[in-house]
Length: 364
Image (cartoon, rainbow, N blue to C red; front, side, top):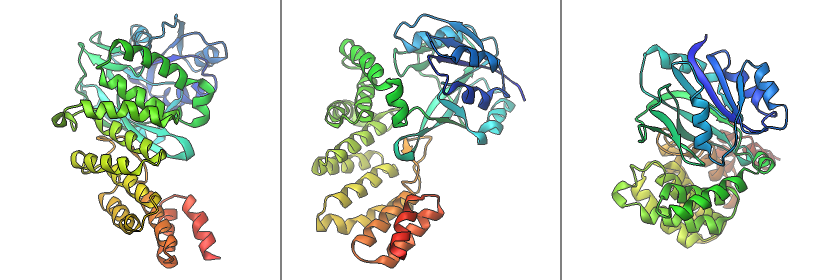
């Protein structure tokens, strides 16, 4: 079923990804507009074979400018923005159709399902469907943001899921995305030292690069600079807080980590991921008093369940199979093998195959 949508994309050397992206959505969009910023591979010809209109444009080191150049060429009443390393989730075609049944004039937020290292899955949000009006344009040279008349648009939540592959380690290295993004972000940060969204993105990029001390430096600045009464309304404060905690965890700075976890829970009391990293911290501290608290924390993760992905960036499993797996580890450590096997089994039943390895070893 063709919908009144122009799919708008910017690409550069995406021959490995673009066909699967376009195949996932081409039956539902009436137009595909692709801006190519300088591909030297088969990207352009593959896109044309999939029915796209492709035009070449000069890369000006500015993603917002590039996005807007593509938007200006769209002719359908609505625009859907995707990248080549994304796919419309197979379960979401009906949700895409449903979005138009209500004849809404509002833009729509979608769930971004990120496939990251070790096959972990995280969830985020982004406004990706919006009316084709000149009032909607992107700003920002990197991690560009959609604006309506210069402000963040009020969008409605959809149940549309877009799968994103670009955070897998091998892909990040292959495309040198980290170096490119960090270079642009650092340049912007020098001219806008009080833009805390940019500072957050610099910190997060350092985290993805596993440069944890630098990540901590920037992320601490973010959470200390946002007023307490604005933390829960900020679109990125909770993510900055969690990323800071994981950075400290990788650095084994447990005392400071636990301080930030305790403070974070006061503001984000239903954020399961914060309790989960607390459980990991307690397990790793190798202290009798800390170990005693481990089952309480991971059981509370199960009580909370998965974090609300429309509210938080979250990792799948922190309120289910990953919590069970870590409870299995705890009971195995203290010698309660039956309890360990019970939690490993639940984790396996919920699709966490790593738990099956432990289960087999304990069953011998």
